[in-house]
Image 1: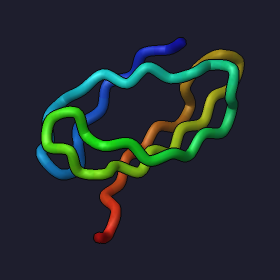
Image 2: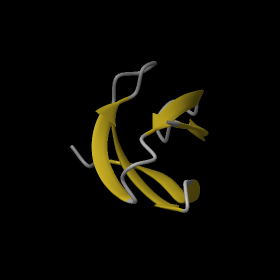
Image 3: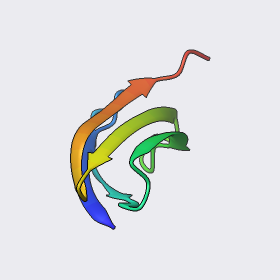
Image 4: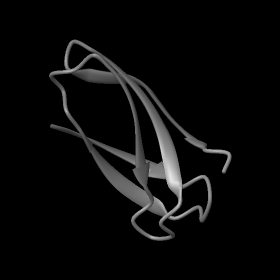
Length: 60
C-alpha cells in the first residue's frame, strides 16, 4: 500500500488515502470521511509509484 494525501473537493479537508500498489490504473468512488460527499478518485501507478492522482466532485 502507498500513502497519498489529497484535499476533498467539497470541504477542502486534507486527508490520507491508502492506495493499493498492485493495481496500475484505478478509478473508484468513495465518500469523504469528513463531509460524506462522494469523491471520484482517478489514480495511476508505474513501478510501484503514484504518477497521477486526482479527485473530482460527482454531480448529484
